[in-house]
Length: 454
Ligand code: TRP
Image (cartoon, rainbow, N blue to C red; front, side):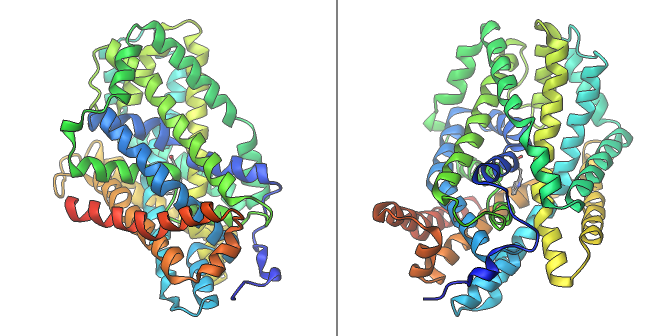
């Protein structure tokens, strides 16, 4: 049986200090704009309950098994995604062309990051608006115009985009231990508390039941393959899988961590927060006559109304947008790490140089998104502007393709004994169910969805 020797087991970039830090850091990477910004607006655009149901099913049957696979691959290879695939392929005597799966993930991550930084920038802008008291007594019309004003100003968007890129580069350049760990330990739990407060406010609007029904009562007559594709893409996006982020975090995991427990804990936290965000936002949307299908502006148009009209709204608003920036920020870090590790390991770049180079590329590509909301809003390909196109291609094509290849690699290509040894699952049934999900369910479902949707 081929196993990687112990001395290769520790990554050159360091290691998480404990099991708990790993789960915390990976959850923080998973929880971000995907949960709070993207999940509610996609749910709104795709009709509600049915979308949520498909999303949950994808998390359960594909997301958790894939996350287990990714953490295991990462822990086993201890490198950047491309290097890990290459190394494991070698150990299993199969072609090293599998490294391109890692390569695909690295590119997807960089593309996602390019627009992610822009949206994270919106959150910074809103944090400042909150501090300046701009939400006080806001109604729907004023809140919509606040958002539209921001979108209409490329310079403002550019400024905040730049701030986010520079800060991310700074944290990544300082290395793992000092940067990421310190950043994730503190503010994360407060986000959960704030969402609960917002749900509490939602209940007082009198529209909570409506929101609940919207989110959890699927209307099966509305099913179409586009919805399924988007829900699947969102599941991968939200869990941060299929692009090597989680794999990269897995590379820093101590050997004694239970992959199963970690994957379940991370997925539950992530899904719980997405649902909580939905429950916090839709009562406000319905109570104020906003359209659930408003698109990317949904949370920015709805939340200021809540903060402008609830008790302690000023402080809670400031806190909330600070949390949002923070949650986004822990994700930007995870999105940048794979490409930086790849440059360092493949070309022997210094960490600082690699980080700055990637930062520059991402900043430049991000300009496409900045301009999509104003000057270039009419430039469209297949009916999508630049931002929508990058988002569609990454979340709905690259991530599912990556997920399928990871499943095929772990399920079919590398040897069963190898993966069994690496996963460290004692229970026979658990291992069998995991392997069934990875070998059959994941690839087949993805292929079916693709065949129908494209
Ligand atoms: N999951 C994060 C969010 O929900 C975003 C993210 C981080 C991500 N790493 C990723 C998305 C890797 C796709 C792939 O905000």
